[in-house]
Length: 604
Image (cartoon, rainbow, N blue to C red; front, top):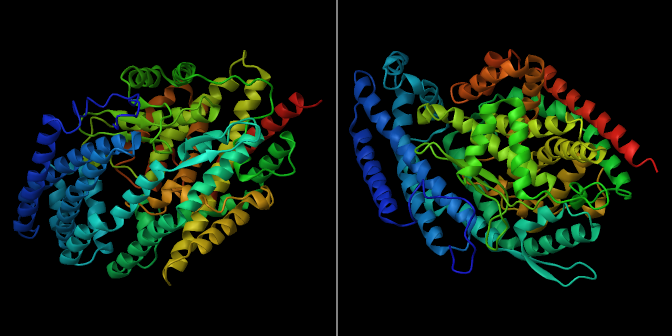
């Protein structure tokens, strides 16, 4: 940490006793040595046919090195998020890219060998006990070979990634992590704040504060527009060039593969969401009326309802509410949350230099997770806390499985997190002592979620799709990126937001567009949200006994496609619209509750 920065809340010593200490350096050195050894070993192996046993032994070694690399990367990612200004961590993070490139080059050789192997030899490999438990992952590696250049060019691409695509992602993180803005609220002294606090300020009851945060943060993003545009153009341009060389037919194909869904599933999902878009738009119009506005501005979507003296939710209170809601589902989930709180797995306080956003990072080596968020004592922050604990629980129930069997796609990664948010909702709405204000506030939060997942996330997909379509012809200017963003917002929000209060700089402020290792990061959130609603419906029907089925579903997520998990665990077809419509029907029912609740409270 930099000398002037307060220490984070979480305890990172289970990872390493100290940053750059003896244990850390020994771990890093052994990992690099093993990656070099494995590279030579893989290169020296014969073709798979007749060498299945030797390949199985080598693959076990690669899996172990992969797990240790994820452990190291998670550790450095946490340190970097906690203080993006720490130059020592930034240097180690850059050095980590070298190890990641080594692993990618090893996997190039593995993919090539698996892809070239006859079916009989590949089946013989999967039958060996050393690798049978990770058969799904190896099948996906074999399938990924269709997205690959020849091994020599793939190795070069892995080397260049260190100073190319990944470097642009690191640059974005460093610049955004240090970025600050001036909060200039009429009648108040100006304050200098990190941009990571802006979105929490959008939940302030004072519209002047929300507008000041929105305008101030966007001035800050505009000041770095050329840097952000360069990062986005470089990341998208590099991907498109590699796609062309790899014979990828459509820029969505790698994202669909990573999400482990078919194009038909995605098209069906987005088609249903588009068909039902008027539902969340109507909720936003209702919200505007409650706030006394003709239409919401972009910054008003998460504004609280206009109740007098809405008390903040201190972190300790949020902790109790989360554990209580989890206990209503099953004591094991509550006990797990208690372990996370007691073990100081969560960095929650606001600090200068802290990156924006929230995430959960899980280590396959120590079987623990770390949760990152900036808690500002709002209901939205409470939901984020539950969301990230859901991610951690997902990893927890898979902790005894092989590392490669725990690698689930993002479409299914959001299942446990969104399900955990639903438990908070059910706990409050089912509490007979909950006040009408509490119910209305929580239902408002549910409507905010619906607008986020059914409008905001599809809007991001719309923008990113247009970005890749146009980037194929050349770099996009700052002006064009702003135009595309506004067009996407108008397309999805319609007249539910004031046209003069849209957010042209959202492309610069949204970290998800700059994650170098994964394109189209956003649509899995909508998938996970609606998928989890279907699971919640099953849980309500089945009662407490559903926990066994739920844990079984989570443990399947690294061993099948999303469609396969849904079919085997729930008996539903994700390529058909019925499941998705049923999930949105549940949202519509909550919207009626929201309308009735607010009509009673604001009748006068």
